[in-house]
Length: 211
Image (cartoon, rainbow, N blue to C red; front, side):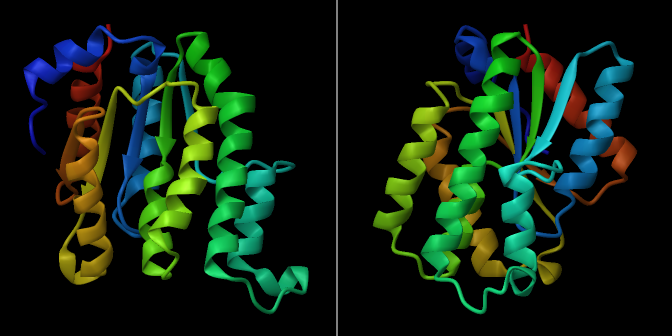
């Protein structure tokens, strides 16, 4: 794990309510969901009021869960084919629903939000599906409006043994991270240690960025 740049920590600590949002990104299979779940439990035991969520969302009765099921089992909805752009647009709709109903209110209450995936996945997997970048930019611009200017305190980019991860997808994530580092801090993590060790290291970094 790379240590956060102290100057970035000072800069972003002085921003608005966005400093309570921490996002976790990376290719499928790098351990994001496990890390976020264990980290949320650890922070709660430390006395933090934590809200742990995922994009597009899997809570029953939500648009996010509907889109998740549609994405993974389209045959259950009698859908035989979807264009890649339409699928990514559905993901954006689910993101906006979760942002407006749950995430923004939690951040306005100064709660700590851990988000498993961000709009980065829409960008990366959209590109991998040959969705034109111009289309993706327009979709993500709509989502950014829903965020009301709120940005992550830090984004954690996970990676694992590259033999288990598509190199093109990993490269796309790193390219995006290099662009977004001017927007908010980005901490790259090589998920090669135990979950316990990883949780402790990430929690320590989170506490550095919080007030």
